[in-house]
Length: 381
Ligand SMILES: Cc1cc2nc3c(=O)[nH]c(=O)nc-3n(C[C@H](O)[C@H](O)[C@H](O)COP(=O)(O)OP(=O)(O)OC[C@H]3O[C@@H](n4cnc5c(N)ncnc54)[C@H](O)[C@@H]3O)c2cc1C
Image (cartoon, rainbow, N blue to C red):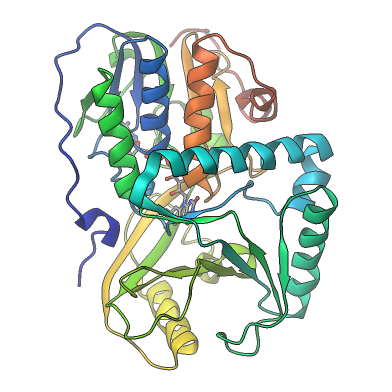
């Protein structure tokens, strides 16, 4: 059984370690956020070095479910109530634009078949119906599907989000890294950063989502690591699911790839306390639940070829933390996508880069780290 994610099996381009010693910005993390930020900074004329304890895309960015969805981690109607109507509208609009940008960058790493957000029971039907209506009220495309003939009958309707996509996330992030390297960005892979003081750069960006524990204590308090577990099957004989599907508020998610294998993940809530961890290992209880769900979905148990785990960063209000880290001169961050980082990671990497380059953006206020971080004393790195 392969415990390396299916996505990372594909060999990536090798990004050369360039001899760039003096840099303006050092980035910790070579996932979607770090690579997107690096590319934007280099295109803005800055000298950039990216450090990662592992290889490019080997964190959550190469271990996820491959869903490329618009919006934030909260449903749209909840986002309107929690963040305010204008902020929620802006966030959804901007993620739709980020998805289009992702498509223009991703080439064959992205397909856009839409996605189906399913109601697993009557209660969830009421909830997702409210989200559907809120989206329509605010002019966002959304379709309601009552008929789901390809699924077992206990699903109670779904929202079809036509603009959403299915991503080969590792392929996309490696491609971003390649683009960044072409712009002169230096990548230091297998290079664990023990302390921000070790980085010889005027500005530092922390782009470690759920896996950067120990870098700053206030980040450890505000960003909670959560483990997601996934499996991939051998290719099936039939094409059963044309687009990514998710149910139970995203706790269950699956998609069928063009070669007809199923990638299925989730069920974190079946053991929520043990899954609040940054230990990147699979566990029997969650994997058994994934197997049982696979049998329910397909009516038989296919051969499972890969089982893996990954760590993402959760925040209390399900919004990312993007911008200056209060109390630390020259330190910035973009992290905490609460399991929704494929599109947000691209967008927030660019957003923090734009802020470093002197730009302003209304989303920086919504995502301000100061809302959840208690400033450290001292004011230095
Ligand atoms: C199982 C799973 C399924 C998911 N499914 C989806 C999905 O379908 N759709 C979606 O949008 N999102 C999904 N997500 C969330 C998404 O994968 C993440 O939010 C996103 O990849 C975060 O990207 P990142 O670049 O910020 O962080 P990461 O990709 O995690 O990269 C952070 C990097 O920082 C490095 N690092 C950490 N500490 C240090 C240090 N001290 N020194 C050097 N390097 C360090 C790590 O090695 C890592 O490579 C899922 C996540 C998981 C785990």
